[in-house]
Amino acid sequence: MHGSAAGYIRAMAGSGKRFLGMRILARLEGMTMHCARRVVCVSEAVRDLCVEIHRVRHDKCAVAHNGVDASLFQPAPKFGTVRTRLGFAGRLEYGKGLPYLIEIARWVATRPDVSLTIATTSTPPDALRGIENVTILAGLSPDQMTSFYEQIDVMVFPSLFEGFELVTLEALASGVSVLGKRVGACDVFLRQQVQWVGELPEDAAGFIEQADVLLGRLRQHSDPPAMHAFIAKTFSIERFCDQIRAQLQD
Image (cartoon, rainbow, N blue to C red; front, side):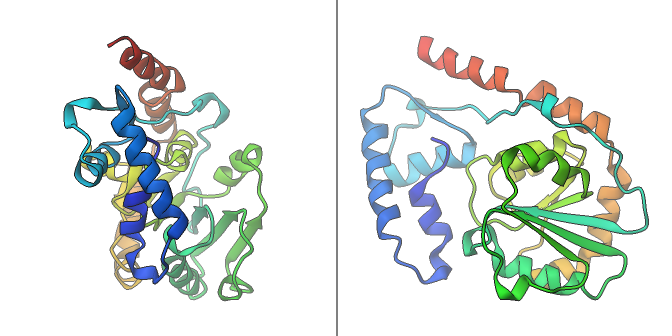
């Protein structure tokens, strides 16, 4: 289970959409899990949704956090200038925190010491076009993401729901600090008190009020070589595959 359709629907309750297709997928996910001998979830939060919503037995579920090939990402030096370079990567939609991101972009336009770079496969909405200090890299392919991480110091992650997103692992492997909501990998790292990950306030107004303190703390703790080593050792693809194999043998 890389995510949860039922959990996604719950998180998107404020969007006003009906999610008919996603509801069908949620039903299919539940049927599949009940038929399976073991259910391997990419995070504790996904496992808890499987147990709570689909009534899958807790002892039938295991957790194996996603992994990345850290060798693809170089831990370049960060916070090298007075300007703090924020970044966002993902689809520009409600579930990824688009309203929050728009407010951050408008705030960035008022700050000569902050910039925002957005990497997306989506068509940017008018609300994000032509904003000072905001750069949009549209249509960026996966093999171009390393160049994106080289251009930022802090990843902002206002997503409303994630299973265990790879972008957070990639960012840390690149020496990029992360400021995110309590979802997916960000939630796991916040619970583990990983010092390179900070909690994004619930709303954009809270972020704007606390931004200097939050960004200053991440600047203070930034250590790209240690961040890269942490991901390479603890969140490798090899470790993920070994955990899956162990479940097959159990």
